[in-house]
Image (tube, rainbow, N blue to C red; front, side, top):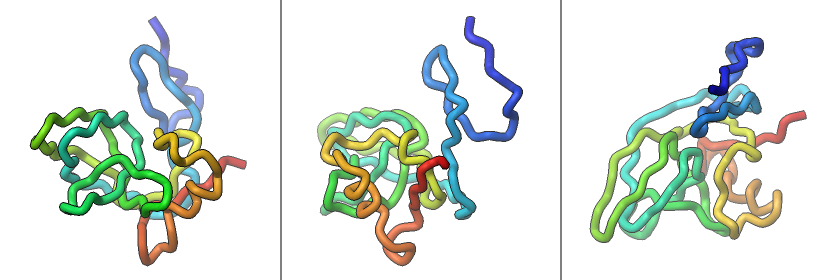
Length: 129
């Protein structure tokens, strides 16, 4: 059985199955805010997926060219005409290497453009130094 490395206590990490990551999730000093978000129909999302709003206002996986408004905290799958309320990060500064980006985000520039200005999104990303 895998043991959690406690030598770096206090650094945000996420458990994924039977292994743990000690790569920090938060990389900046922006205030972290969490609350429930409504996930749209026909979504299959991993935890830590960047999310955008669809035409109906529900959260769906963000694609390049759209603004990221939240990050999923848990994995979720919704069926046809089914929505789900899940906990989401609504603000914070995240390590982009920890997020589960859609394949359309194939460059760092597209990821940076998706988080926009603070007036558009409270989600920010910053690479580890």
